Length: 353
Ligand code: CUA
Image 1: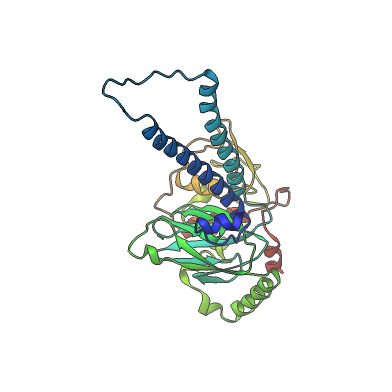
Image 2: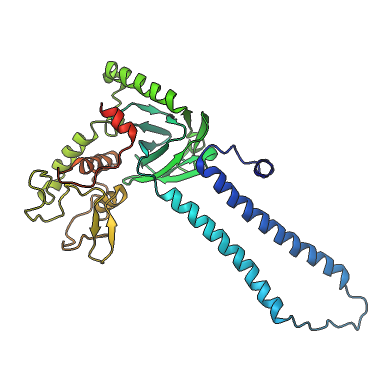
């Protein structure tokens, strides 16, 4: 059934864990709407002939539908719409929440290419290598305009924006090559902004990564693409330099030894990442990448409880990669007492050895 529907609707293969559930909802929506249109259209056509005007003096009888009919006409479509919502919301929550053991890959978009980098690992332009059957989280930013990372076979699409991080994740199910497209009109070469996801078996991926790292040491100078240096392993160092240059540290403490015993103008950066933070509005949020980035670009959007809204915006002052670097720097600031550990996958552990 799945295969028949997929072919009828000309959909690409289903190569991620999301693909089947996204398609099932798609089939459900399209089947019910098509059936409903066919019934409405068919009935109209039937009535057209059945009740056609036969004589000049003919009048149309007034029909009063029963209460039961009225109730059914409202509640049947309502139940169907609500079912779409419930199924869709479940799928959306899964898509919006990467599992904590996901492997991180940085994605940088620019007119008109995709660049990929692994923490402390290799970079590449236009080719993203990932293991099959392991979750992969993408942390994405753009150097210029809005792009959209789109992998049809994974049923995955996420906007990529300048001066901001967006994230998404997927788990590929089949080794193979899959096309990446840009799904946001971004200039003359938009339609050629392609890349490829190469899904390897987990063993082949580990092998590939080791190979890359051996090569990386040997060819470090050749591979040091100045644009991707920001997004590479020395991101933390870069972030620290940017934070010092921009004067962030006059208000935010980064001293892991004393932690937050002395009160600063702004909240401390130590153990900030992934910390539940109470806001002036009374709401509590988790300080994730999106929050940290937003706080740099739009500092008054979410004020930490007990602090004054005096931080200036860094919109336009920090480039996308610089923002990413500062976020990585904040993520690296961990005190010994921190119970929360940074969210890192098994790959990161391998990379550290
Ligand atoms: Cu990038 Cu369209």
